[in-house]
Amino acid sequence: MRALFLPTILLAAVMFVAAPWLIDGAPTESTMGFVQKIFYFHVPSWMVMFSAVFLCGIAGAIHLFKRSAAADRVAAASAEIAAVFGIIGLITGPLWARKAWGVWWQWDARLTSALILELILIAYLLLRRYGGPGSEKLASGVALFGMANVPFVYWSVNVWRTVHPKTTVVPSLGPGMRGTFWWCSLAFVLLGGALLAARLRIERLRARVDELYLER
Amino acid sequence: MRRMLAAALLATTLGIPPVSAQPRPAQEEFVPVTDAETEQLPAAPLVMSAYAVAWLLIFMYLWSLGRRLSRVERELDELGQRGTPKGR
Picture 1 (cartoon, rainbow over the protein chains, first blue to last red):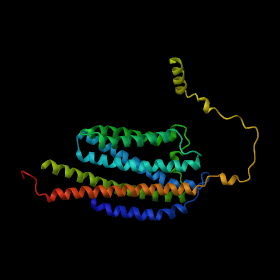
Picture 2: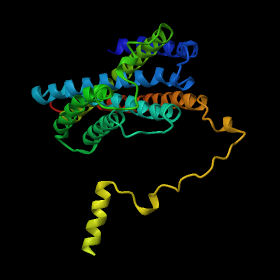
Picture 3: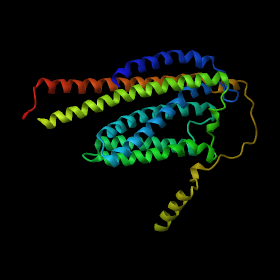
């Protein structure tokens, strides 16, 4: 894991350096105009967020049912990554909405459920930080709720009436937009993976420090 | 008093707007303006802000990770320098 960190973060950095040129060269969207270019960072940040929430939920379930300390460390690390990328999504979204919809925020199904998902993750992190001994199990339960919320957030635009673009937008992207979008998505996934590896290393070292204190 | 409180609570629950939130009277005439273009919201500052915020958050998180990692590595080194644990 440690050996993979440097090449992953370097590759992500190279991709991010090239990203502005690709984004600038991508065609301007017909109805939203230039502001639609936020899409190339907004959607990939949610992709990383959703993946990290899933990882957190699965690791939480393993910890809950098999009492695996390693799974608990994965859950803690991925929850933090999910919260960070969720905040990026929740800030870039309103900046896009201000121009596209004329408002910063709309209490529709997609935006509200995404906010709830972020709040669940913050609750998870607060529970782990201030919950005291044994809070890991409660936090694992919260992680499961977070994971269950992801499909609702994703499908909300297709089920309920909302001003947010539908999930069909990504598969139907034109050639100029598609390449740029997947380039940025891969860069975000690599960055998320590298950050997760670094965060996991902190968890592992902390566990080692705790072991050493207990041995004394 | 209790009835008034109950009525206020009911109005809040049903989403009835208070008196101050009543809509403004209907407009009776339209006044043309010559500088309508300046009212349009430019997209560039919003796009730049979105990318700047994303990068700021990523770098802040990287800095936080680096700080925490060096702290825990230092703690581990200190524990290692203190020698082997008792009973070993």
